Image (cartoon, rainbow, N blue to C red; front, top):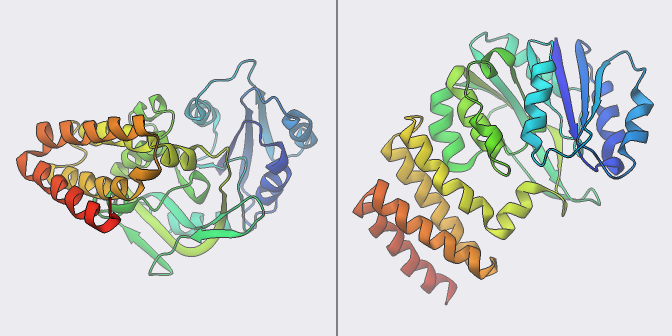
Amino acid sequence: MISIIIPNYNHAPYLNQRINSILNQTYKDFEVIILDDCSTDNSRDIIEQYRNNEKVSTIIYNSANSGNTFYQWDKGIQLAKGEYVWIAESDDWCEPTLLETIITGLENNKDAALGYCQSYCVNDDNSIRFQSNHTKLEEYVDGKFFLKNFILPRNPVFNASMAVWKKEAYLKMSKDYIEYRRIGDYLFWVELVNYGAVFISGKLLNYFRMHDRNVSANSFNSGTSFIDHIPLYKKLLERKLIDKKDFRMAMKKSYMQFRLAEKKLPKENARIIRRLFSEHAKSIGGFKLYFYLKQIQLFSKKLLRV
C-alpha cells in the first residue's frame, strides 16, 4: 500500500484539483493523509468535502502554524501505514498513471528505495515554464552514484510530488532535513538515496506549480538558497556523504550559478554569499578551489560586462 501525504497551507484554490488527481489514480491501493498547517483561507471547507471518502484515512488541522513544511512531512510519515510514501504537495497535480508507473518500477527492483517521474513546471495560468527530461524511458541507478552524478550537479528531484519512496528507507536515515526550512527536501533526497537504488521514469506525469508563494522559487530569487546550500555541502563532507571531489564540484556549480544571478539578488544577501564561498573554499576546498572560484569571478565579470 502507498500512503499519500498532502501537507497543505493556504492552497485552497488548488486543493480540489490536487485531491481529485490522486483519487483518480489507476493504481488503487493507497490511503490519503491530509495535514493542514493552520490555513487562514477556506482550505478546511474544501478538505471537509473529502471527509467521508473511503481513501482518506486521516485529516488533521494544526491549531498553530508549524512554520516548516518538513515538520508536516515527518508527522505524516509517522502516521503512514503503507510500505511506500508519496508526499503530494497541495498545489500540484498529476496524470492518472503516476502511481502505477512509479510503483511498477519500484516493485520490479526490490533494491530500489526511490522512484520518480518527470515533471512539467507550470505557472498559475497553466502555461509551461519548463519541463524535466531523462534520456531513457526508464532506468535504475545505484543510489550513491545517483547522489554524486545526478543530485550534486543538478538535482532532478526538484519537487516532492514527482517521487515515491520506501518508508523503510526513511526509518534508517537521519532527520536532519527537518531543521532546514527552505532546502530540507534537498537533504532528504541526499539521505534517502544512501539506502537503495533509484528508479527513473522518463514519462512526464507530474505538474509542479510555480507561483509567488512557492518556497523554492523565492529562495533562489532572494539568494537564500545559496546561503543555505554552501554550509550544507560542508556538513555533507563532514558526514562523509560526499568526498572532497564532490564538494569541489558542488561548490563550483553553485558559484557559477551565483555569478549569473548575482546582479538580481539583494545586495546584502549577495555580500553574505560571497563571504560564504570565500570562507568555505579556503577552509575545506583548499587553495586550488579558492583560486578556481576567483577565476570564475574574473571570467564572469567579462562575460556579464560588470
